[in-house]
Every structure is written in C-alpha cells, then in structure tokens.
Length: 608
Image (cartoon, rainbow, N blue to C red; front, side):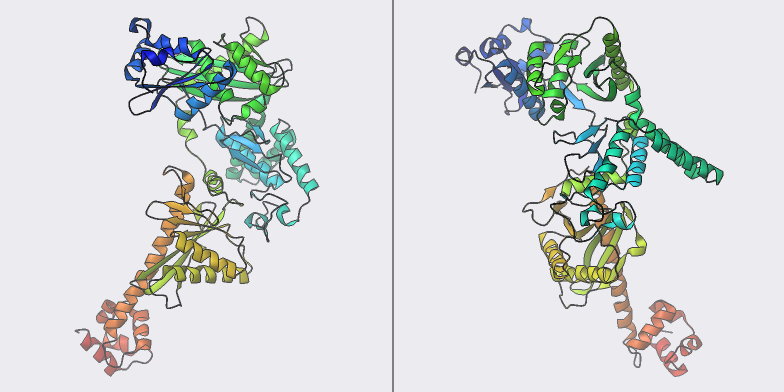
C-alpha cells in the first residue's frame, strides 16, 4: 500500500512489524515496534531528525506493509525471521561464517552417524564445534572414524536397510550394522567412546597415535610419521577449546564485538558446565554509523531467534554482553520461554565474567583481523563434496564408488557405451570399460543405455565385485528410466541412480518428479559434471576409433582379394592405410594369408 497521511493515521497501535518497500516491491527495511503507529510515523518527520542512512531509506520508500502480533516478544521473533528471509538492504545484516564446520553425531538414531556439517539444525543430534583449525580437525576425525568403523550411509536403520553391505564394509571402514553384522549395543558402545573423545577425553587415542608415529619414525617412514604428527595435533584440536578456560562451573554464552570503520565482527563463545566448548563468529555487513548496542541486538536476534536455529535447544542460564542492548527484557522473555527457565542477559562490571567478555572481544578482533584464514577456509577436501552430494540427492550411502554411463554413436552406427569409475572423487582408470552396443537400436539412446547398464552390472555382480554406490547417467528422465529398468531386471533396485542432463545441468533421481537444480558453484555438482564429462570423453574416443577403422577398412576393402580378415591383419601390423602404403612388398607378403602377388596388388591400388 502507498504511504499516505491517511494510512499513517489508521495504523494499529498494537505491537507488530513493518516493512518498507521500493517501487519494485523489494523489501528495503524490516523493523519492529511496541506500537506500530507512532513508530512508523516517526520516519515521516522532518529529514533533519534522521541519520544519513535513514534519509536515503526514506527517499526510496514507495509502499508500506505492517503485521500486527500479540506481543513485543512475538514482534522480535517475527522481525528476526523476516530479516533472515528478505535480507533487506537497510538492515544490519549478519553473515554467518558457515566456513566453520561442526562435528555432528546423530544420537537420536539407533545407529548414529558421525560426520562434518556446516548446517546446525534442531533435530536432536549433538553438535561439537565450530572448529576453526579445519584441516587438523578433519584428519583427527578421520582417524576416529576408522578406528571405530562408524557407518557413513543414511539408511534409517533398522527400519530400512540394503540387501548387501556397501564398499565401506569391504574396505574395513564399517562393520555393516545395516545387514545385521554388528549389534545395536555394540554400535552404541562405540558411539559412546566417540562422544567421550569429542567431549575432551582424548588421552588414550592420542597415546595410540603417538605410538604409531614413533614406530613410523623408527622405520624411517618419515612421511607417515609427519602425517601422524598432524593427526595428533588434530586430536588436540578436537578438545582444545574444552581446556582453554574454566568459568567456575555453570552454563554461559559470552558475546564479544569488534569493529574497525565499516567492518565489524561478533563472537559467541559457548561455556557449558564450566568448559568452553566452542566459538562461533559472524561478520556484519553495512555497519555504517550504527551504535555498538544496535549491532549487539542484531547479533542476538539473528543468532538466537532466526527460524530453524538449533541454538534455542541449548540455551544457557546467562548470556554475558559487553554492553546493554535495546529491548533487553524482550530477549530475556523469549529466551526464557524457549528454555523453560530464566535466562539472564548481563553486562558484567567486575570479576571473572568481565575477563570472559574481554576474551570474547579478543576473539572478535582476531576474526576481524584474520585475512590469511579465508584462503584456507575455501579449500574443502574431496570427501566434503561426496558428503555434499549425498545430502543434495538424499542418497542413503556416501557415493565413494561411482560409475557413469554415456552413449555415443554416429547417426545410429558404431553405437558404443562407456562406463567410467571414480573412487573418493578421483578417476580409477583401471576400472574404465567401454562396450559396443549389440542391439540394433539405431538412434534409440534409451534402449542402448538400458543394455549398457544391464551388461555392466550383471558382469560385476556375477564376478562378486562390490557394486558402485551411485550410478550416474548422462542424460535426462528417459535415460534414467532405462537405467532403473535395467537394474530392476537384475534385482538390483537398491543401487542408487542419478541422471545429469547437459543443457541446464539438471539432476534427476528416481521417485522425484521435478529436477534438482544445484548452484553452479556447488562442489557436489562439480563432482557429477567431472565424472559425466569423463564418461563422454571416453565414449567419444571409442566411437571415433571404431569410425576410423570402418573408414580404413572401406578403403582397403576396395582391393580385390582383401577381405575383412586380411584388412584386420594389415591394420594390426601397420596401424593405418598410410602405414600400409609406406610398407615394402616383402613386409606385406610375410603376413599370414598374403603372397608377393597380393602384396603387389595392395601397393598398386594404394598408389605405389
């Protein structure tokens, strides 16, 4: 609705949220109010009363939208969610440093999983982190998972399960609880040990790694010793924050803030039972001339109140702040209601708590000044992309072993298929296969794909080799359906399948009507593109080879007395028509089935 004096006079005096929009209906600003009418009308006073930022905002406002709620607390929550949804230009925006990963343990499942994630959800799982020393943390977690053989699949055990173990079982990385080869009690005991390690009880694991490191050094395997040294450092990283500081017991969140001109950063440190469990940092955008108190209020609002925030499930009894914030009583009311008890927001003036706030401020300054870490944060490992692919396609098993199929032909002739294999995101060229399509399908790529997938998986099954975790099909819905039909005919319907269509890079999976569109920068998409492009290259190369042989045989076939068998012998020995043309009569005559007279005829026809 357009903003008119009549409209302003009819606004509600109840609590609510207001949105200013521009001529294109884009949300410019979201605000909350104890009473909507006086708060909104204040924007339309003389410009002299406004800051430069507010004056610029009001010059762009074309329409107004208001939402009435039941209380100030509801307005606070609604404001946080609307800012997160619309990201208005004139609000103080926070950019969560999602580059910091967490370790997630799905303790709510009968057979929990342990993996790295950058998304924190209120789903009953336990989260450890965030971790800033990413590389060593991953090394240490990999050792923990290998020693304890945690499953990496996403089956809802024991309700659903595959018919056979995946590749992890065959390479000793899992004891296959999915098919009953490990009991729930045994698995849960293993998870309890891992939880102890993540909570800081790392001494036994560290001693084991140090013993292996010394043994490697004694065997002069210094490369392995150096890797184990880094793993030991990573084990320390898993629990380092727990030993940084003790706050005389109790649960606290400690907030720190640092700013430098237009830049600002905030830090929230989580202290539970006197142990500093982790630190999460955020960066501010469009700070302008906002006061520190406004920045702190924005940080609290988005950190605790944004929709889907898992922080509401682990609220402390007290939040320490470097300064008081506006609407502090509202924050205490909302957080207290979520926690089921009082949650105090305090700006301490003396004692141990002041030192904690100072420590949080120092951490915020480090985040603000850190320029080197940005490059390290962007370097994700290949395994991250595989876990990302599992997440994006909702796969039951991490696709460590993938095969991709492509069909290539020349106007319906020389139809071939390629099957390229990637393991842990890298090509395994020794397992590449190509095949000539036997059926006379012509240009029917669907029938050719069905034949290729069926022949490949039948042979792999009959040979008793582990089946790929994911079959990638170069094509769209038609090729996907053909592949699914081939697997169903072999009673291998539990093999995961996905198709990648070239034109729009859309991903199709069985049972889902629409396409999955991944961001072009998504590393999960890059994995699919890479294996698809490799399969296309391999199939095209084989098709060209057959086409070249057909061309050569056609030229040699014009020579009287040179049938298919003799053509093959000439090409096998000399490689090409040019090679035959450059050969001597005696060299050709010595071939099986040839004579000097036939050799002379060949060279005569080739222009010698």
